[in-house]
Image (cartoon, rainbow, N blue to C red; front, side, top):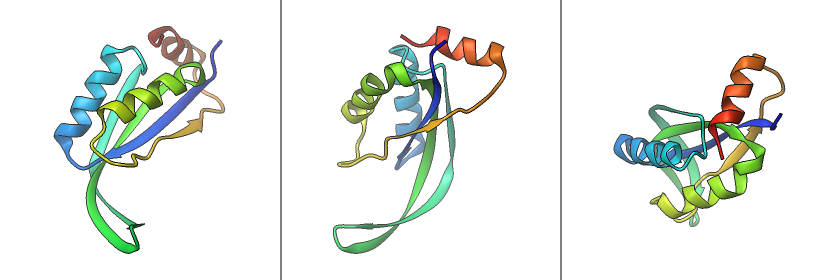
Length: 105
């Protein structure tokens, strides 16, 4: 079975998050995309501390499609340097993990 992972990114608006989520599902790069927010992100960018409202986009997928998913995110993201990180799923329901694997290509 494929290694299940969670890929995270953030967007600046709910509309951007929903559009990105739909694109990911349409391209079969994620089994499920969840959007959380708004939340406040504090970070350093171009030498200054920034504080922005963002939306967390959490994608259930597999390590086999990470590269193509990351490229899809970069192509459809409004940020110059979007967050694209992968977190391992160390265990879970075998039926759910199989569904994730079967849902991506």
